[in-house]
Image (cartoon, rainbow, N blue to C red; front, side, top):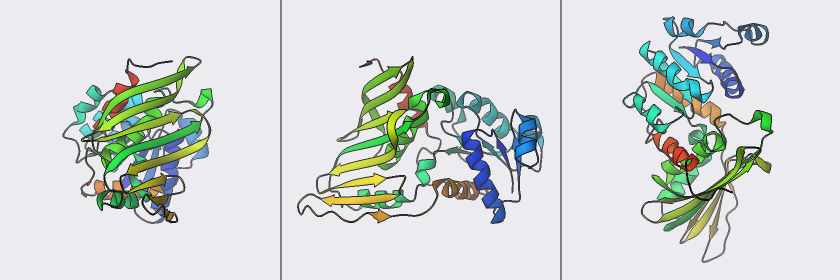
Length: 301
């Protein structure tokens, strides 16, 4: 399989690194690159460089990784699909839910890159949520916090940059979400912190906290049940349980594996005819939640 990576910004660089590892493992045959700055690519990357038109028209290119800014996704994805390519598009699929809906029915050819789906610690989370260890799930919180200088903040805004990950995770783990409350704080005209209250059917409430101005990077989830609570650290890939009745705390369970590599392996399996066992694989639910939170007319201070 020959793969083209389109866009060599932050995520494109990660895809290139992982693609080169897949190449060494002989999981793919070749990697070509496409970016608007062709001269820089020729100097730094030492790989075959092609224009976008060349990529989609080349019969030897089997799959396309789209890691360009979100506003460009819809047009590039549509053209790549029209030329018969299997497409990996970085999240979110589009700027709006309505725009993304044009890709309904493309689930067998289009893979959307919600990397947290492939964090190995989620194996433990799913097991404990489904085997009754927590009892009745009552409340869930997530924290996705960064310290990002103003010049490096993504133009789509905080909620579409960070929030979509947690909307997607909770949609996958506990079911469709309903946005109930949004508190936002602005700095120099941009939202830099948000607390988003939510509800999942039939009786689970929760909160998503996202920030560009935190003291340190954090990626955490906490689940509170009638029998036990669970703390999940997505960065350290650790999971810790606290039993309510006994007060006993289990030592953290540790999981291993780089999410970006796990995601690529899932994509390569998908690209060769494998089926995704992920509900809402294109992330429509996460995009709809982000849109509702972005447009929320509630508390805005």
